[in-house]
Length: 330
Ligand code: SIN
Image (cartoon, rainbow, N blue to C red; front, side, top):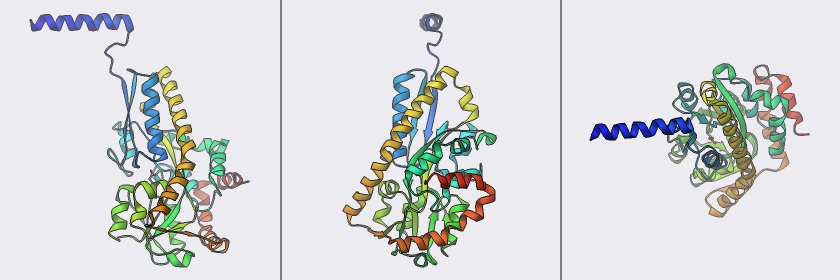
């Protein structure tokens, strides 16, 4: 009896294969790993990507999304990608330092005056050139995704750089960000995103820098009494995959996956600015954290102290690149 069933199943599989050429082939699985909450621009972009791929490539390609560092944290995701344990991610641009110096440009303090300037630079020839900066390390940059400009949260009010003197700030794994905090005589500590809330809650650190949506979704505002609206730096992402995986996807399917991704990125970018403002308002409404607005004179003090960091990294990043990015403000 068992032999008969086995033969029947095998015959059905063979005839289905002969008819469709693909029946019973398992779909290509794209594990998409990220560290933020689902109700953030990146979380929503990843879910949209999954939805579009399910609509257009059902049975051929499947996307599985793992938010909140469930699968891999910041320090491991790119390594895991090169080993084939995860196929896509969108780390913050500050987290590629082990793979290229070039993306450090996005961490330079006060380089971009607003997100329109960021978009203009990323879409320019120079910005697009940076998507290829990981090629030599076996990674493919598939597109930029916005979150927004960063604010400074702290256990004490920060109005002028001298207020940060002696404080400990968590930073992403970037030497530019370390230099930025050293410039105000503070101590930078490179720590994974998943540890920030506990570090703040236990007062192991005094502050951190992040966007409104991350400060809100990860509840940093509940354990940080002050947030200075400094807009001093950028937190954006690059959606990446490994070259080995990307080339293994059949060409026609790859083109559809890329189209789904481009649309998901456009969707994420379209909601990022509104999400930023909505989450800022929710933080104000919570009355848990005071938002400090800087006067022009106070803000200029931060610019003056932090801007020399540009020169420190000019050689690694390239002056032509910095000039091009700066021009996007005009
Ligand atoms: C992220 O937005 O992906 C995390 C940012 C951070 O590590 O602060």
